[in-house]
Image (cartoon, rainbow, N blue to C red; front, top):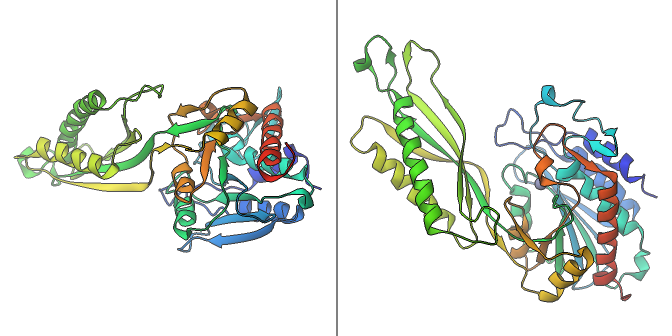
Length: 383
Ligand SMILES: [Zn+2]
């Protein structure tokens, strides 16, 4: 018997699993993976824990119940984003209940999913399964997508259909943008502030780049448009600037971290090279050097599934049509494995990646019901 969903969530929240391209914040996800493996084994799953290359304590969980060629995959990431403890009302690692809301880091995004998925499976007698149920728990979705990438590279056949339980308010998502981060580093030359001729100020070079990128943002917005999205254009967010150390020194390097979100059909490499041209043109003839650096991983845009019967079954169950989302997921990697994939989970993406993230118990229960109906539809003979 599994513990109640709230208790499961309490234990998963208590196991820190921050992933970040910044190694100061990056943590192992093994606490979450090991706990999930234990519960899955109790339900009769065959469980594998696969470490990712490198020695950062990162692993994927692959748990399979039943046998067959088709079947359903329920997939989620086990990591969370970093947090600012001082901006939380309570400890982000202690599940705190107030007015029906369960607060904690990763409650909505997306540890609550695993409690719902495992409880859905518990409703079935494994002997009644005609097709397998696979639960995937991935590492590093919030930073590099290396967990999902490792699964995609394995080429393993996990089944025919997949649900990724990211928080969508239980509305199916069939399409989302791609995202990558890039750092623009402008190089100058340090010198004493009293004489500008002694150096080259990188902050001033970066300021030019910033203005040029703002106007490039408008031009790519004019060229690419997909009205399926609430924000129908590609977007650029200037998320972090860093440079200089003292007012009395000429700054020798200034960096700008940019989040770029692409529509399905846009080629990431082509966009990066266009961005490089914009920076090069702007700094051309000036005293600065520049470099473009990849920050963390990237997620490709996603458009699918092609199997209308799957989409229709999920839409009927949820009582609403599949939509598009602005956030990226691991769906392109699962699609690469031939899985018909939709994103569908409890909780609201608007509270994710924020202090006082929460999910309601009612939403987890509704998700459990929906996942159980999908298991019944796609893994048993029962209609
Ligand atoms: Zn997520």
